[in-house]
Length: 379
Image (cartoon, rainbow, N blue to C red; front, top):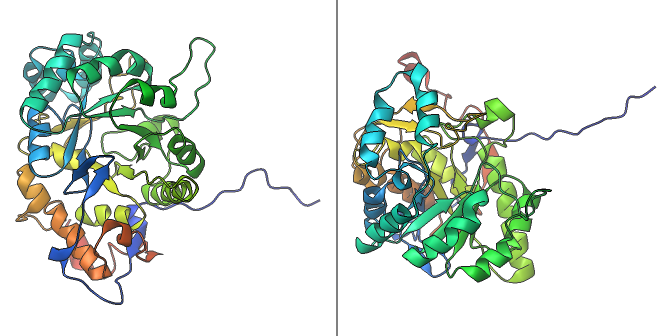
């Protein structure tokens, strides 16, 4: 008797398994346009600093805005729980690996202070920066009005997985069309990894979608829960949903690949896979100006019952300016990210990120190892 198949699996791909095919023509990298738009806001680089305590504080948000990007301040993190966040950050970097999880659980058990939300937002705004802030879906109804009153520019509603519909017997879930009507700012929602989830989120009227579940360097969701999709496949699927939604509604909503990046080539591959921008965590945690002091930790690490993050030592590799624009002092592709994007676009013969979406890609597991025996033997 032939056995019927219970479940069909398809192959999915991460950054190291694919490559971008050069174009038939080339263009001048200096003439490429890498602008990124969220409704009425235009950023000159398609890079967002993640809403993680080791990455974004008021100072880092200000610096990112000055160089043309965007940083997201986590309104449920250390910056809004403590008047003296720098003391807490220093303590987190000094304890042993055995002590870190209990410490983070203790640190993040302190209540969020409404007055600190207002103070942090106003400090970013007073610096002249665009202010983007992040909240979890469960706290959005309570915190969104506070952020709007304080003058935030962009709201990011973000958790490990966020869907357009949530089933619960205990409370009425977050309804994004209602949220859009209640606060006068663009709303980015994440995270998702599938065509169907992304398409449904787009239909709620939101302004952008974050793509990625579990790829971050300090995230252990994939190990703890077993969920996630490698970033290239997730980006391609969500980009297909974006384009389908555009065809049906006439409204273009950008998607942002969030997490799993280690070097400039990964950013280029995400853009070729269909991303309009990328969100970086661990790369920026290595900046001299980052609040994590050379460390990085997942924002699900402090969960009181099921931690899904870890603290990692990323070191301090260079300034934010150097990481984004060079000159690079290392050869591993972790610096001059904008130079990498522009050069890859030039090699593909495209002038805009939307044209980059059309670049051919191939499955190429040997892309990082072919002919590199001397490099590999040295590591």
